[in-house]
Image (cartoon, rainbow, N blue to C red):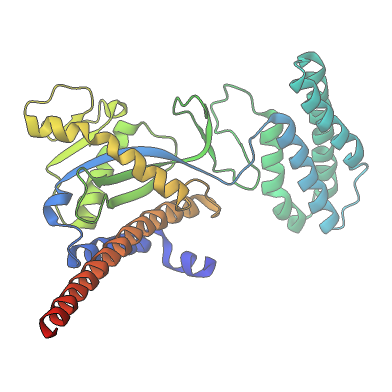
Length: 337
């Protein structure tokens, strides 16, 4: 499956979502007028990474550099395997006990160990082109982990195996910070006959402001469905979107008609759809590699949600057909008696 996903790519995988919508339309589960009024929202697609701490990242960076040096046959002065592990354990214990001066002392010790390994490797690989190329990215990541500060302008490294991970705060009490990427989701405003179908879904890197993603999301939705969106409903995070204000309606604003008021109250119906994709699908934890993996996972989650709705619709039709046939058979037997 990995080779298949990489060969097709995220752009061509969108055909799966389009085909799921076309199949739903052919089966009568989705009509064209259902796609004229849409709801757009963003969510966070968490990456399969552990919660990042400075101590954890420095310890892991040192372990990776030592393992790579052993793989290439580079003899280090010291690997710090025993004392590094002990310092990482002590730092976690001191931080948990709110003994922050001691925790900072152990963190400085971990930083010292990592810096010594980095400088030792740089001395050993100097002048060797093959070794320089092999250690270029691991050394850059290790130095970034060692030197990054709270308010650095450069993007921070939150995971060594997935450096593209971003820290996103959505204001949730249970999850103040989530580590992954932002995903834009577009669904039907009112449920179609088959349910709330996902009309468009894609990952957005760089943690953009929600309002700046609306134009691209609407254009992609219209391209995927072939239907022009007449009314778009969003939450207050989309203020300043820059689109036609008579086409985009923000929750909390006064609605001019009863129809728009009813549809605006249905804006929050997109939240259970996102929840189903996170729990029933794999939007809640992405295991695919890189930025392309973020996009591929999001698109496949949208296609899977649509196909689940379509299968439920077909099962419902099949049960109705069986009920009609059973009733006709019962009536025929009654007439024969």
